[in-house]
Length: 339
Image 1 (cartoon, helix red, strand yellow):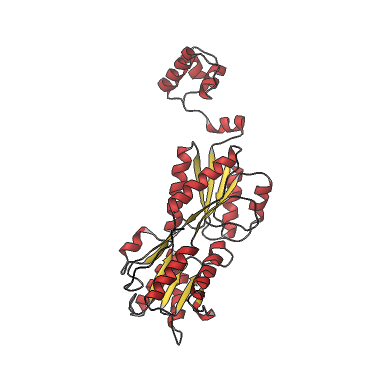
Image 2 (cartoon, rainbow, N blue to C red):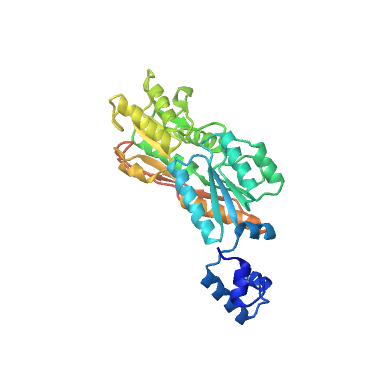
């Protein structure tokens, strides 16, 4: 592998001149710059990123810790983060927390040890001393999708409250009155927020959300299956199950089929977090769609702003309801919120 000394010898200039060209310093003449660039191409020289990071105290690398790489929502989020980071001159190292706070902190610690320039995190729980220490130490950080309340870090997220209201209006219009929810972990902000939004939306129609209709899930398919089995065993089962994420919705669908029942004839089903393959389930699943790609891109821009000394801003984008056939046929169109 060619070294910077080889480039200098090939171009007939000093090593310092080669360094200035590679760092785009304006003090180099056009002729010397052309010779250096020609030598770089001839020799196939690639700068040593590690050595450069030691000199500049920057690695042009971002860390991304996501809650579950197997969840299609987070897979799409990671893809949009990587694309936007690459466009801005950064690479991304991804850590999968698998919804485990200990594994989340393991990845955060490793990424900080690698001297990343900034960190994007979707927290698995409501607090992490390691992340709080990193924030206090000045590590540029942005929370995406989930956040830790009270921490002075920009948050890039979707607001699903209006979409949940639209969902309940849709269900009410279909004649459903017994609505249940499979909640996400209470330690996560999204787990709490979606239950609260669902309860508020039901209240607008004079409907209650009894404890028996709140099932505790963990954003995994198996928990959706177990909670739905519990709902079906009730003396008065719900007419609708609203799963607070896409994987739990699939678990719910499995539970219904295992009983020899059908969606939506025997139990209607809706989900938070739309994914592309929901159109291929039988029936296609009604879901609340978040602007996942936009969230990933906005999170990267906010983080790069903080890295480069600008104030990164929090961003909240609206989610929207996508009506399909898993809740039944809709006799009247639903007015969907535009905010």
